[in-house]
Length: 251
Image (tube, rainbow, N blue to C red; front, side, top):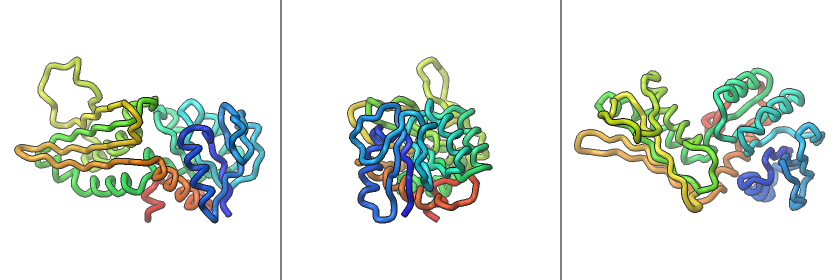
C-alpha cells in the first residue's frame, strides 16, 4: 500500500485525485493539506503543513505557486518524495525544486496525462525538421475561466520541448498587440484563451508555405490528470533523490 499526502486536497484536482484513489487497491490518501478544512474528506486535513505528522510514502501537490515554498521545506525535513503538479511557478521556485531533488525524489510535470506526454515525444521527432524547413510555430491553449495562470504550464512545457530540439535558439512571444512588424522566424508564439469550463485544449501549429500541420490534444475530464498523478506517485515511492518527469513513468 502506498500512502499519499494530498497537498491542495480541497481544490478541484485534489478532490478528483481523492476520488480516483478510492478506486485503487494499492494507494490511499492518508492526509490532506489545504488552507481550509471543509470537513468533507475521509482523511485528516491540516490547514498548516507543519502540523501534519501523518506517516506517508509520497506527497502529490496540486495546489498553487504560493504554497510550494513551504511544501519544499516540509518534504526536505521529512525526506518525502513529491509529485509536483502546481503550475505558474516562478523561475526561483523551479530552481528550488531542482535543488530539492538533490535531497529527495521530485517528479515535476506541467501535465500528467499520457496523451500530452505522447505528444511531447512526437514533437521531439518532428520539430527540428519542420523548423529547418521554415515552418512557423505557434501554440494555442484554452482553459476554464477559473484558471489563474497564463499561459498554462502545459503550453510552456510543449514550447520548451520544441525549443530543446532547436538548440534553445527560439524566443517566446505571448502578445503581438503592441508590435507592428513581420513575424521573426526564430520565435514560438503562445496564446491563451480563458472561458467556460474548458478542461484543457492545446494546439501546436506548424505553419509552412502552402500547408499547415497541427497536433491537437483535448482533455475532456480531469480524471486523466488524476490517474497520471497517482501513477507518478506509485513510480516515485522508494526512488532515490533526483529530478524525474512523466517520461520516466511511461518508460
